[in-house]
Image (cartoon, rainbow, N blue to C red):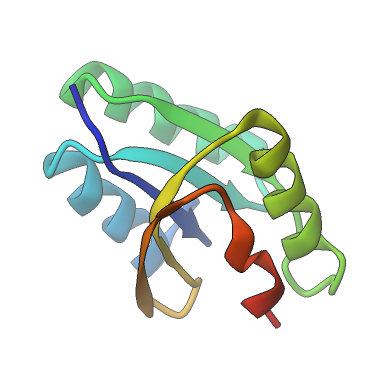
Length: 107
């Protein structure tokens, strides 16, 4: 059973989608974020079946400054613990497993 959870932004295409596939191959649970729910749901379904991982889909436009805080607020409310996150630019940040206290670091 996967013990790590990665948040991947821009996961509906390009680098974000490929990072999601790589983390899934490593059996990390995923939180996928992008503007297009339909594309994310298709990817999530594929990765759940292929790799037996948990995948949560959240939509939002990260160009809106309130979106990152809303995403981390939602995850914190659920008690979701993240091991790392990747921005839509392909940068990966590793953190100690914690309940979203780093949400204020997103700018």
